[in-house]
Length: 124
Image: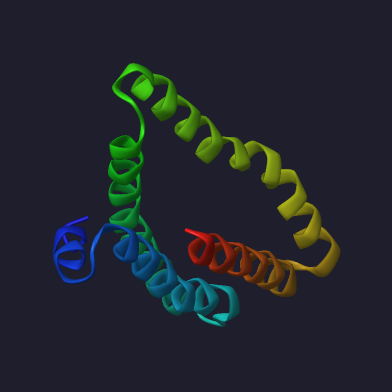
């Protein structure tokens, strides 16, 4: 989260979110295809750092666009949508892992996640 303000100063808020999210994709794929735990852990840590730097910027941008009278509702809906995918996609992801095995199953799930982040970041 410390790098967020520096990125905003250089490229602006919206571009900072897009840059940080897209920068996390190689680390997501590194985690997906790693054969060693320490490589996967390193990829995971870098990806989380970049995504965690983008989240407060994205929330701040959203709050600037929402009228003061509905900020609480806007924040609640944002958090609900963000957290809703965890219980909904968990069983689907584990179904893929069960079907394709621990290596390729996770690789497929992480690749699908990377594609969704790419699409979402591009739309943002």
